[in-house]
Image 1 (cartoon, rainbow, N blue to C red):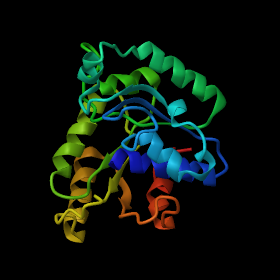
Image 2: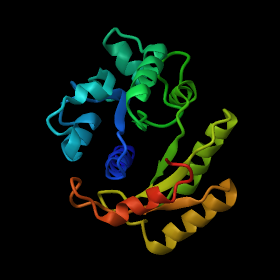
Image 3: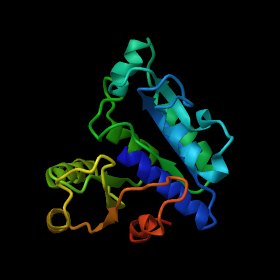
Image 4: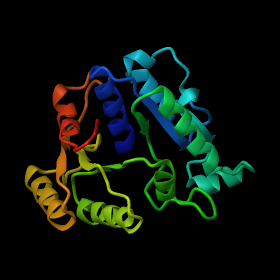
Length: 220
């Protein structure tokens, strides 16, 4: 949910700044169609005012019912994911909208096909990844490994944002959050842009939720 919430805030943020953003979820698993209750695109279209009433299918290239890694979810339906199609759609949307907000499916090393990982889609599309990290226990290891995987492929992350869990993780205490930020910044050289707290109304998040986005270098 963290990546989708970050995507939502980014789209809202860019609309508020006068831009014409486009949300794109190239691959969605775990939903019957883009309008399904479990659809990430459906969530975005429901809470972004300019998108209400429009078809979420415009923002999804591949949709699979089983909640699995894309490679296997596609395999279950006798289908294959063509990254050339994804690249073409991104290029077409980029001619009409700015910026295009891409949301990945799972983590960087999730398989999209027999030979392609999610991180390869970032490289192929030329996207600048923003890392959506949980603020509590375990985030130091997870976030640093994510950065290492990107750098190994010569991809520079645009920034890191902590996003509080909706369930209220007991490890998300201020002291631990500060320590996690300090460790990640120390060992990666990338400053954590900030913490996005729990959101009560996704249609109208508190303005503090957008402040970390303002701190991401070169986001515009």
